[in-house]
Amino acid sequence: MFGPMRTWLCICRVTIVLLLSLKNLSHCQVAQVPPPPPPPSAISKQDPQHGAYLQRLQSLELDGKPALQSNWLQHVFSNYEFGLSLDQILRSQVYTGGNHRLRRVLHELATGKKVRIAMVGGSITWGGGCTMRGTKDWVSIFKKWVTSAFPRAQITVDNAAVAGNPSSFANGCFDRLVGSDFDLLVIEYAANDGKEDSWLGSRKAKVYEKLVRRALGKPHRPAVVMLQAMPDGVTKDPYPEGFYKTVEDVYGALAQYYDVPWLSLRTAVYADIMWKRVPGFDFKSFLSFDQVHPNDLGHRYLSDMVVWLLQQTALGLLMSPYSAVDAGFVMRGLPPPMYPGNYEEQGGLCNYDEGLRDVVVEADSPGWSLLDEGHDGRKKLGYVSSTVGSTLKIKVNTSAVVPPGGDKDVVGVTVTYLRSYEHMGQAVMRCASGCVCTQAVANGHHREHNSQSYQITLQATPHPECIVTVTVLPETSSGEHKFKVTAVMLFDYKLSPLVQDLPGGMDDLLRSMALTSPTR
Image (tube, rainbow, N blue to C red; front, side):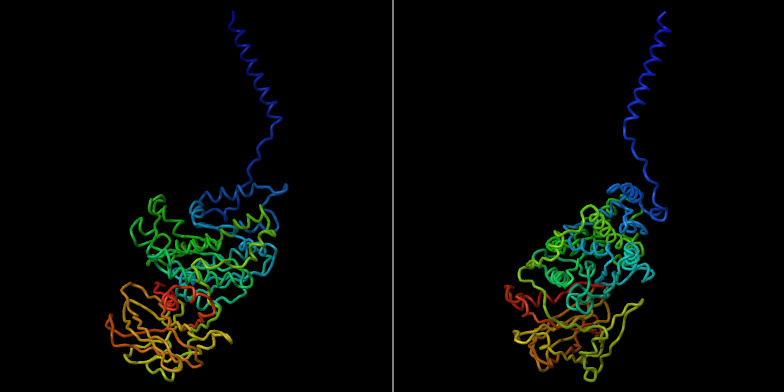
């Protein structure tokens, strides 16, 4: 009796629920259908997270219009293929800070201004390890992207890297390498500057700070980015000690002090490799046989980190346009040095490469020859001798770096020489005439299986014809006597309060400049 009625009631209830649901749905805002994915060329070989990220970006609207279809932003997130996963990219951006100077650069790129971007570093930034320099190195990859990302801007990208030299070389030869008219400088020296045992009062960090200050103090108020590649201590030492076998954490304090972005390849990939999170992924995946120079994929990784930083800075301008607040930060002067009294030198001369001919008196240097011992297209010029007792005569005007009326007590004459694991001998450096200085003995031989640049600084009195000699000694630890001089630099340290502020005076200063940092 109740069976047919109960069935009829159930049917009525279901009908009413469906009708009410349809009525409510008619008053709801239906979620938008996600836009189609970007073209396959943009995400086909990337981590799927990158594709999902781009799709989300494409769905964003600003003032009722798709955000990525703005006049200047539409190219920024296209035409680039990341090698690093999204997680690795995010880890690589160790510090970005307020980023006001880089925001200014991106603002000028977006508005079609003239922008010059420069890079300094060692053989990694020069292009070492890749299969084709000019297309596969990270600077070339980045250049291709940035010129396509901002087609209205007049962009110049200059690679000023010199293989086989530490950051102290860039500090000493900065004006010759980079000049003054640049808007963005990328500094890559973690691999060349090697390890650092001292966190407090680090000699390498003091010189690196001078390099950063020298760049930030240029007229254009340029942005600086610290791009840290992979030093061999990270790759060759056991887990977890290898993680801190690098100077980059010491330099990271400078990044935060000067509000300079810090990008780290080590931090991007280390955890994935040590914890074996990605099957088959290890240091050999992106580094060449020496586990220092990146291969083609490793060069893309370096470019990835810089491209992502600029992309995110551009996206930040979309959400918070460049303003007077940014301009105020940009126009501020530099703070006092993080290391007390560690001011950058205000004068200096640099002679390297063919410029060495300007300071070497070849006629009075028998047994020495200017040789290029580079390979794979990289130049490694220097004066070389293997003859015991042969003397290289260097003539410099140590008065030239002292301005009229300046204190003329002492000038630093820095000689850069090569150290390697075979064939190398020793030499003594001294002032022979004109000026007076301390003397120093340099050993060009070491046991590490690489060839590296080192520096010695002599304390010389100012004189228009200061003669410095380099004489090959009979003593040797390699059994041979080859010695190579690759650069000569001059500094007037009395131009800054550095000498007076350091507890050890000039001796402490010269020790801080006489780096023994491994380079490639």
